[in-house]
Length: 109
Length: 113
Image (cartoon, rainbow over all chains, first blue to last red; front, top):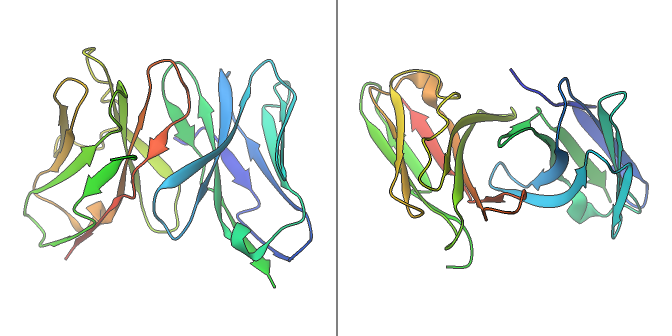
């Protein structure tokens, strides 16, 4: 069964607005990673946050992790049309990354 | 090459036929993963190779699915007696031994008629 579950399943916003996606998981993790997927092809790694970290930034991306609630959020600020994609969180236990169903983000020009 | 490559890009086959999917990981990456992604769904873990250790096959959905990897090089995923429900994109990823980030290939889109 899937470990991570993203919410919402789909999100549509106007260009320039901020987009927030959430990920919940069930068991303890070593780290949590966010990936982006365009057009149903390969995933591209965006950012990794370790279990002892609470917040991390990379460019327009901000990730938070709350291990007590077993949840993470990905914030994309000042969204652009090129951010349109599916976003997946992957939770890492011993060796495997387990992915959720993803959030489909659409940025409207 | 610079990234993970997979072949073929697309494969159409008839129900009951066997298919082989190939993954060329990034040189030097000791870990290799196979995932399945059905249309509009998330990634399902299939199998994981780490160096010369025994592979983690816990995600293989049935005994029709098998995978091999020779050392730290190419891997092949074989699906025997394909069924229509096997239609999906099959993604391969590799990573260096001491890093957690996975590098994905473009996937093979399999359609079983």
